[in-house]
Structure formats: structure tokens, C-alpha cells
Length: 183
Image (cartoon, rainbow, N blue to C red):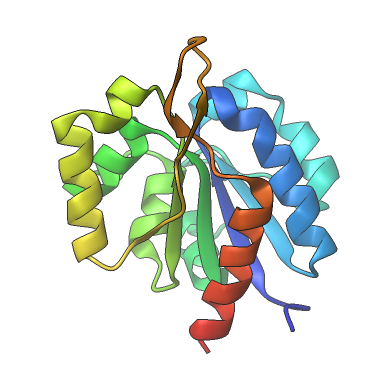
């Protein structure tokens, strides 16, 4: 089913970043080619080499990397995507995409792609329920972006509330379903 499908996995700098490792592993087990694209802040929280080892692919996190091959990376990555999954998705990234701001590699890839985009929000409950964040989510949904979660649970701040990254099983299942429905 998914043997050659490319999943661009966008990873932002949230407390749930460690769960992105399990998402990479599970997507690969399901037969997907996972291409990690981190924000620079995410690359500061967790070493990108870990995602290279897990995915078997180059990890991207700089807008102008100046690599050996000259290509416009955000466009070439956007073109490769069969689906874009952002997990975890911070309030910052959601706000940037809702406002059309493209100031890092991940926001440029999302904006340049015609592939389905799934956001998996993960943040403090107050941030998630903030009227501006909710307005950004509503705007993104109106534009056709999909959301997976968040769920209620124990937050990084030590309180229970809505804002936890959805379970990895649910995320992987929605990616599979999203690819089937986009055929």
C-alpha cells in the first residue's frame, strides 16, 4: 500500500518532540519513506542525527543549507511529499502558517506543497485554548488543513489538560487513511 509514499515529517520544538522518534519508527514499519524536516529550534532540542538514523534519510532544518547540490530545497521537498505530517505542531508554527509567514524551512515546505497536511498540536492547555490559537486553527481548517488531536492528559508543566500529542497509533492510522483518501 504505502511502499513508496513519501511522508515529510515536520518536527517543531515542543516538549513532545521525543515522540517524533516513535512516529518515524512506526511510519517506517508501515512502509513509508520518512523525510524529517525540523525547525532550527527543534534541532536545538534534539540532535538531527537521531532522526537521520531512524529515518535513513537526510534531515533538513536550515532554509539555506548551501549543500553540495544546488536545489531549492523547500520546493523540491514540497514536490516529493505525498503527505506532510507535523508532529508536534506548536502554536508558533500554526500561527505562522495561518498568517502565511514563511521564515523557516518547514513553513516554506508546507506553503509550497500541494500535498495534504496534517497538524498534530502539542502545547500547554492555556496556549491551545487561547483565542488566537483557536482562531488560527479554525482558519487553517477552513483552508483544508487537517488536525489530529490534541488529547487530554498530563502536560509538560505537570498539570492535566488538553494539549497532549495524540497517541502514535492514532497519528499513524490517520496518515495511512489520509494517503488512501488522496489517491
